[in-house]
Image 1 (cartoon, rainbow, N blue to C red):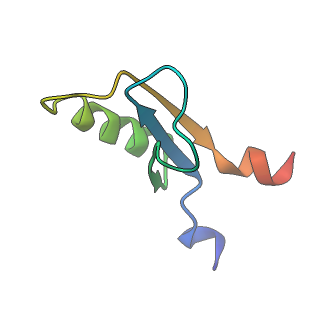
Image 2 (tube, rainbow, N blue to C red):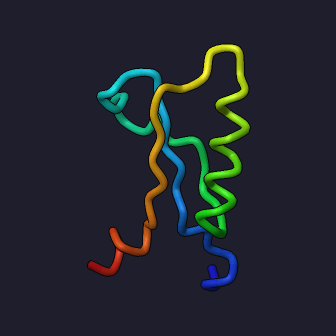
Length: 64
């Protein structure tokens, strides 16, 4: 996979303060942080919106 194909920004969100086990809080990966935040804005419009979110740059996990 080339660097252009990688989506390094992971959106996680949930209903409780504490993350769900495994990857249940993972929403998706995006090319930019702005795309991830746009998805969060869409999710907030649902009937039962998530209570919290975070956008993680996965490159920091891989290269630190």
